[in-house]
Image (cartoon, rainbow, N blue to C red; front, side):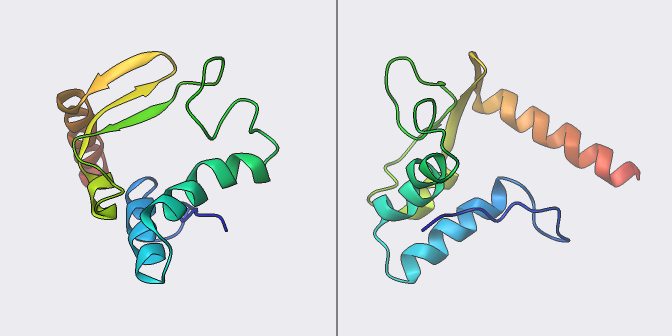
Length: 110
């Protein structure tokens, strides 16, 4: 099973919608771990990219979401983002919030 609800569709916002989907997968009967694997490990395997993505291991791409609470206890904890590491750059919550505010302001200007 795979997760991925980020198509360019009205009222579906990349990233945010995945958190909702993870919750729905758990509500449908998957464990939190299985839901997370649908969005990470299983997706990498499906795309033939499991040598570089899907798990946290030495030598793999280190794009990570660091959470402030355990998503295995409550899948909604995936929304409690403390920081992100992407392309080797550490982005703390304050930087993420600033990026979100700038994006929201730009959308409102259109």
